[in-house]
Image 1 (cartoon, helix red, strand yellow):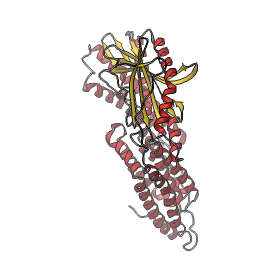
Image 2 (image 1 turned 60 degrees about the horizontal axis):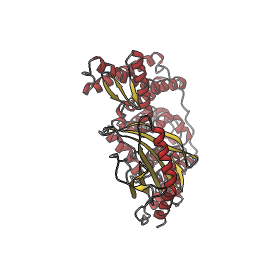
Image 3 (image 1 turned 120 degrees about the horizontal axis):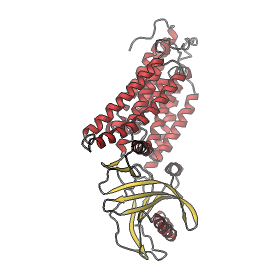
Amino acid sequence: MSALPDSLPVAPRSGWLLSGALTGGVLLVLAGVFWPTLYSMVEVWDRSETFTHGYLIFPISAWLIWRQRHELARVQPHPDLRGLILLAAAGAGWLLADAGSVNVAAQYAFIVMLIAAVWTLLGWTFVWAAFFPLLFLFFAVPVGEFLIQPLMGVTADFTVAMLQFTGIPVYREGTFFSIPSGDWSVVEGCSGLRYLIASVTLGVLYAYLTYRSWKRRLLFSIAAMIVPVFANSGRAYMIVMIAHLSDMKLALGVDHYIYGWVFFGIVMLLLFWIGSFWREDDQPVPSQPEPVAAPSGRAGARPILPVAVAALLVAGLWPAYAGWLKARPLPDMPAMQVEAQGGWQPAGAFTTWVPHWIGADRQLRQPYAQAGRNVLLELNYYVTQRQDAELINSQNFMIRQKDPLWSNVGEGIASVQIDGQPRQVRQAKLRGSGGQRLLVWQWNLINQQTMVNDHTAKLVLALDRVRMKRDDGLSVLIATPYEETEIEAAATTLARFAADMEPAIGRTLDQVDGQ
């Protein structure tokens, strides 16, 4: 590291040595205390090419601060106790996220705590002067998987629309579509999430370095969000057309990815090239704060040590409480049993489909039949929420991507009538390779209340856990075969089954939790 500017008075220079050392030490201690959260970020960077850029975010942020070292050194560090308020709020958010096993929220809270610690120890003037480099740390959080399904839908909509505009007949079912030359599906890799995240990260950094006006920075950042979505949709259409015009000989193997990346690279280069016409990096950087006179004597340096200790105590309270919660023993649980009601009787298996719900403490899977109608009931009970054993988990889904036997041709929240009462359920339409189709309804039972919104369910369970209340939950899933033209009859069957069996399911939940 180069020395602080020689033009600075002695007091600011000596104040920076102590403040900088203590701030660096506090940040290292926070990284150690919250290592599981930090490591959860590193794990995603390591296993997912979409988020590999996370390794670069902390070094880039440090480099951005280094670029401003002469200006920042003119700011007299001064502890600001207001930062402790943000630190405590971020710690509480981290506790709630940890209790609900929401890694992304915990990771964001960790980044906020780092920034809050800098604010507490160096003061708001420094934070404002280094505002962008500090905020850039948020790009280290591997977030965005919730966009995969919407982006897949946008890509499928655009591709099908363009094929129809081109005059090619298309039959579509969900994200699957067929044209005369072959069958296609929009899978996770076609969503364009990788392109979007790369574009936004690079675009925001480029805008900060290239422009001085916050308006231009904002406009270019928005363009970096919009352009890759349309570019990815155009890429998908281009690949389908290349394969179609080559009689399905091109764009099906490795060249499928090569064409996509080349096209995306050209679009991004055009975006940055066009953005360079309005560049302002040849203009002077906006004026930075003038040096702040140091208080006389050593009084200005003394408060920072107790403030650093206070910051560590405030931050350390939350993981200590979280550790105590995790140390509580699990209750004993009997096996789950549901008494048949309403004329429904246990029956033999009528489908090979198996839902993918992981980590349940108790599970019941039982087909039922009544008057020629078949319904599959699967219950997954979680006595308490913990990592990899959660009612709401991204690994709980109807069908895994690229399943060789089953396809999900439509999933969403549907409004239905059960026992004469309006209800929301998560509805999915599944298609098997053998021709069987299944209509599936799923909902969660928490505190004897039905929920289908994952965010609401996560919040309720996390709040229950940190308040030491029951944080158990039950996933209820029912499925029945249907013909493509008789889906209403299948929905009626599921509604009748749910109305007949829900009281017995509720009693079962009480019996399991009451032990």
